[in-house]
Image (cartoon, rainbow, N blue to C red; front, side, top):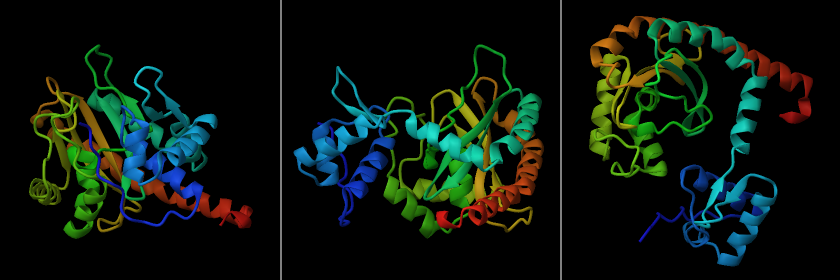
Length: 284
């Protein structure tokens, strides 16, 4: 029988806060969840859960599969996210850098930025023209414990803070289809992965997140100083048959150079946001 951990005992004062928590729950479930399970996790009565889901459905943020009757998110949130990122000018400025790295590597290049307690893929460039290639995940959350990109960001935090984040989102079941055989399964394995990432200065994923896919990633900082805060991750991914460890590590200098250039343009985002706030003081 399908089970889910109940949400923390946090007072939900408004229908809006309840609806947002439902959205956060569904964002972690690509196959959706049934009404009863959503109510159980949220600690809400079936009728209250149904009302909130109906509102989200009517506004186009949630859909219900007509066969399984499971509720899942639509792509509307992704569209809003891309629109917001686009207004910050970051993706436009970063795209030529991603394109250049994709051309040199011949594989998929993806940029993720920190969003609260997670990372979201926001931009990409496909460098492979082969039918056998890894497709981008733009608009989707990064699975932190099974990706090189996630490891780079978590490794920039203290072990305590990294574990707090993972405990909130949980370890996905590594036997689930789509997870590789080398997926991190517990906190001890995660801490060892973060230790190695800090020591090497880069994160790797050898068939952890998805079977048959390897990747290498480095941190993107908000300025070029080596101890500046990490604001994102830059990754190169591809089919395991092509992207061997030697191949990926050989791309590390180009990957690090591109990440440094991204750090150089990051202040543009901050300046643009400050300008938007000055132009619209009521939006603060």
